[in-house]
Picture 1 (cartoon, rainbow, N blue to C red):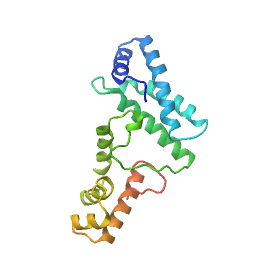
Picture 2: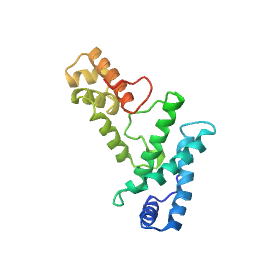
Picture 3: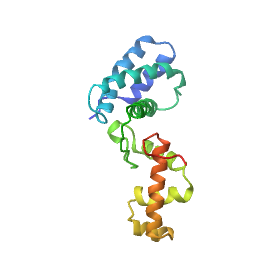
Length: 180
């Protein structure tokens, strides 16, 4: 169970942006264990501590971009996710990312935020391709059911899904993806 209070952290961030150095230090100290847990669930070894430090530094450098009317957790989670992606790119590792609406729940993020992230990614694909991926991967229709719902052949559905997922991997910077 996560032991953080996102509303409290949001308040501390607002206060920090208004010059409260004490609450800013308190925020950084409170966010650190959450970040460590976030990275440990995704990576093994000592790089987790390095990623926490890089994320905290990035939070500090980008704090002026925080919208005080927006929730804090999605903002810090996006910074952490970007640091993880940068690390994975540099290390040349391959990480499997699920296109699942429940994505992010273990990170303390609300499912609707994860669903929004998935929709943002899918919106970068052609509408037909996004629809096929949505039916097959998100709605968990079989290839045959997706084919029947879209009027395409089963083999066409397989090709559309494969190419679409490769394109999505490219959009998030994962090895093997394509931005074509």
